Length: 230
Image 1 (cartoon, helix red, strand yellow):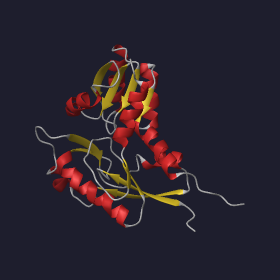
Image 2 (cartoon, rainbow, N blue to C red; image 1 turned 90 degrees about the horizontal axis):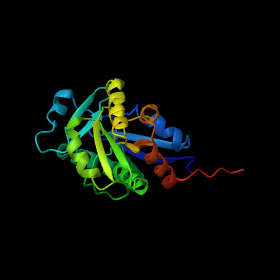
Image 3 (cartoon, rainbow, N blue to C red; image 1 turned 120 degrees about the vertical axis):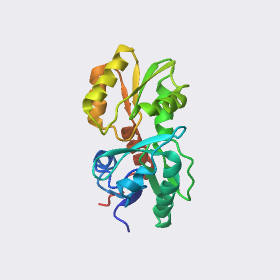
């Protein structure tokens, strides 16, 4: 009998995601084993540079193994993450978690848990009639964020601050949202941390929804708890 449960975790960047997994594991619990894979694993920075977004591309921001961040186009990443996801399913792993809030057209033969619809639908469920603020990693992601969030809440304010850069930029973004009198904030990237959530909450004085926090709790619901015998 297996003592624990195994899930696969796929990042659009490079594994391991030491910036994400410790906080996810705090929620999932020690009985869960996670196997990680990244769409950019094994690639040099020169190879990754060929995936840079061009005009009209859907822009994604992710983290590399050395801690640096990079922008990539969704069209180049989707086939690579699809391969990683399917690889986990073929290994017999029943639940695979995608570590990105971007929008993708993905298929697979198992249970794929995607942060974007979870974050979107939770926010929509509580934001009725509220003015919301949405924080994205990069300014050139704001047009796609506006399109994504335009029907959530009564009004939307978009700002950008990378979770992988100077924390002062996040403070500035939070100050803008405070000045706009938003009533709810969404941190729309898996890179934002629990500490960043608290920071934005303290500056804005309003509730802040963190993608990784909600995502980890949904995973926990799906996986369940280990049965402990007496």
